[in-house]
Length: 460
Image 1: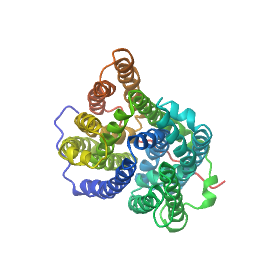
Image 2 (image 1 turned 180 degrees about the vertical axis):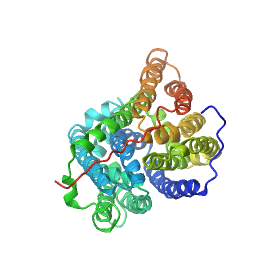
Image 3 (image 1 turned 90 degrees about the vertical axis):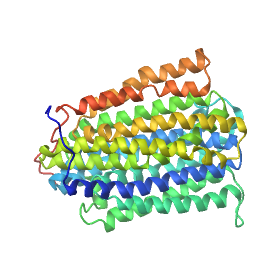
């Protein structure tokens, strides 16, 4: 294992990598484009509206990570069963994760819709931002069930190489969200100008349409898994136990990471709306620059899971070496893109000079963060999770974030009273440490495991 491992030369690896990554990249470009255009539209109303919607979307961000955790937890199993060509087991896992996603979405919708002011006060103390955020959240809460089920199903479909459906759903969401935003935020074609409330209704309508399309595809059009409505009631004790065992660390990982990220936003949010507006602009650009990263993470999960499920462990080392080299290249590209386009993007916003200068500083830091996250994410969330090493990923990703980055950020903001940009630097101090630990773990063999079992699963 200590010998130098060469890059993978088999074209099948690269074809599968491209086949999964390319449509997800397109999907993420469009999805992040929605966020960027929403930010630009709200930016015409002022910094208060940008801050209110940005902070009001933090619960949705946490919920999104919960659904991603559910889906990625399911993917640990579905990708390996896909390599084994066991569609019955995959149907059972889809049923399990869909039920979890539905109940989670109802809980979040209730909390956000009934207690919007309490939610907003977690992130800011500015009365005008809270008031606008409350108006937004009361409506946006209705989107949670639609978004939760859609996001979970699409992520699981990626693990069985069904990636183009996500792309087309994102196209529909992009078009409908932009159209509804234009109509309802600004009051076009006879509609009333509703500001942030219009943005909330646009979100609900677009998510509802996306859910209906995904439901039609899964129940009527898809022909390999052949999931039908009656399958939602499928149960199997062993598969449920496997799902809980392998997915609970992933779910906890994403959920706690989301809470930590929300806590970071709370720290920044209490330093003033200018800091929130500047950070939201930089974050939107970072998300756009990292679209290839997200595609590579999904591709890495499928590639490694498929190889392990089919007992082709001899492919793991060359696959891993190749993925590390590609991640480094893509990370440099992501960071360079942020630095190249930061000034033109900031110029698009109708914000004061101080906020623009702060956004420029944020862009430099998020470029470094983007490079680090891109370099290790396909290894941690792709390869290591695909091998079932979910507990190590959980411990590494969360412990350093909660025990180092977040405490330092709070101290910097509340005790040391450092400028907001230095508060953010300390909040992200965990990133280079995680890069080192994930690369160290992947150099061993403990994470390389076949998780599938021979089991007779039948409809009950």
